Image (cartoon, rainbow, N blue to C red; front, side, top):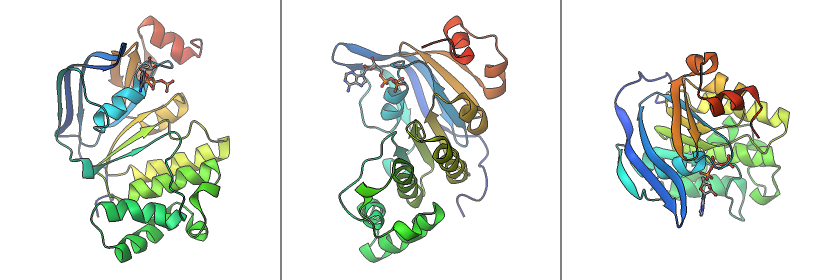
Length: 238
Ligand SMILES: Nc1ncnc2c1ncn2[C@@H]1O[C@H](COP(=O)(O)OP(=O)(O)OP(=O)(O)O)[C@@H](O)[C@H]1O
């Protein structure tokens, strides 16, 4: 089974050389040099507006880079992205999950079956028939995780997946993320440094759209770090 074990860190999945991303006049990313390999668990951290979401969206193919070279060996079907606030259709929880599978080619019957299994994994079996829009924030994020998980992606890209949740839901969803990420490559943005320590093997710190630190997680938290990153870790950067 794909998720049985953590894969060896190996083949490069994403290679970025001098990559920039612009939104009109806004330079969201600049001069990004980054390689992410199979099996890595990369945390993207940095102040608001530093470019974390932009980088995730670029990796997921949602926005085109404006300069540099971006190589990805992952097909769109092999990666799933989770947003801070999940997108949901006005449909049952089960159908929200099933639709993602159906769009990837599963028959509707199989899609519903797989969706039911995935919802069971995240503790939402009892709510499968509910309108997804009536779920609480934590339940919505579980549903989004079930939807991502059901696709059996090789790579999971998560954009502050627990940021809008209360402490209990944060803990529950984080535990599910840890389980869902087993055997996969994980790239996630987070402001929660405890979560970064628990989930990541590597930390990429962004400042004004540039990578200013890229270190194994233990080295990152041991320091020394560039000044802004140091203040961020101390909680003194707002
Ligand atoms: N669609 C867009 N149009 C214009 N500017 C954008 C767009 N998306 C992002 N930006 C800008 O790009 C920069 C990087 O934003 P991004 O959302 O990637 O940062 P972030 O690190 O994820 O921030 P946060 O921690 O607040 O989520 C910011 O200046 C932001 O205003």
